[in-house]
Length: 73
Image (cartoon, rainbow, N blue to C red):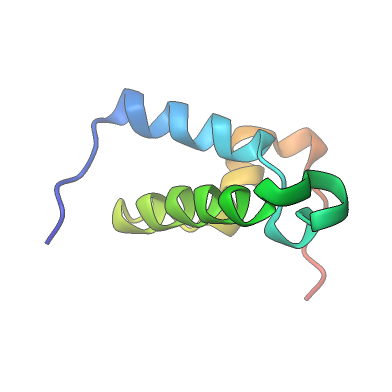
């Protein structure tokens, strides 16, 4: 089992995650040869959120509810 990060660090990670591109937006055209590295970084952040019992898809609504679209399902 991995160790949980403290609340301040978790909040900072959530804020940073809301400004990261979504994986579907990361293309070789936009990011050049580093697109795979960007995708790995996004996945690392997602995994850390999950390890800390945070659903990455819910972070947007928690951090910036006024600019988060309603669910489509």
